[in-house]
Length: 256
Image 1 (cartoon, one colour):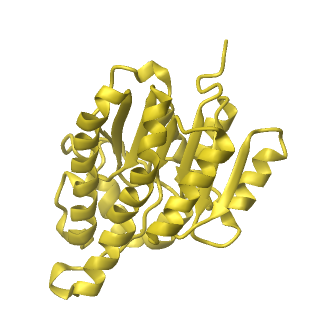
Image 2: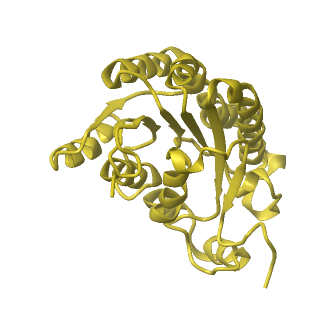
């Protein structure tokens, strides 16, 4: 059986954290035959996770990029397109963070979250758009959040929710504009996913609170996200566009 992403040319952001969603997705995609160009903000991080896979003969490279800098983001997209000979999949996985009660939020806090969670999606997708059009069967996958569809007071998520709601709205509009060019655009909205970042930040009572919102009371894993992303990146989902998939253990479905 052929690999599900055989020959697909993928740009994937946020690949530098071992055990993070991006690095897990990078590995799953590469093992399914994709050629992957990854990136991360932390110097050398994306290069390191890519090298580990390249050492096994997989076609993966990584770059250090500050996606909040539009020029740097565009340069990464163009370099990736040159390296791969085009772009079939753009996966906007990377994001910053900023959680605090709205009453304590400053304009600088707000703008930081918009820049690192919403603007960076524009910074990569806009320069990639013409390359995606030339693919003729392209897929864009955006990472949103359960916070983009559900208000949760104790999380202090006003800016995060606004940014991720923006990602969901952008996803639907890009799906509409991209359809005539063969570009499909979808979003994933995870719940609490186990990563080194969430393990450090979501602890104690906050972790218990979040888990108790889930119908399936465990944290998600990078593999959980990767399996749905794999479907959306492949031609198996050729009639699927403009959707926001809640992959959250049932947080947005109800209570028990």
